[in-house]
Length: 84
Image 1 (cartoon, helix red, strand yellow):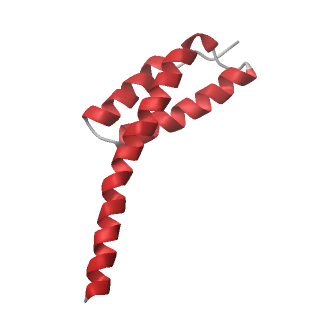
Image 2: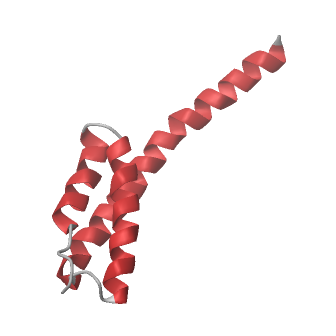
């Protein structure tokens, strides 16, 4: 018996990663990777593959958008420390 897919949940998390909090994007990305592996192995219902893929992409973009300010903050902190 195959596990049911979580495509709708992953897609919702990917969208929430943009709207509410980027941490949802990380969750969407990780969940999607795990589910896609299980779908390839035949353990999970593959009918949710498209939703899962879109949620994964949204999760990746939300994570990247979260990383940009963190990298900039680190850069400015290093510049501030070095300039003193």
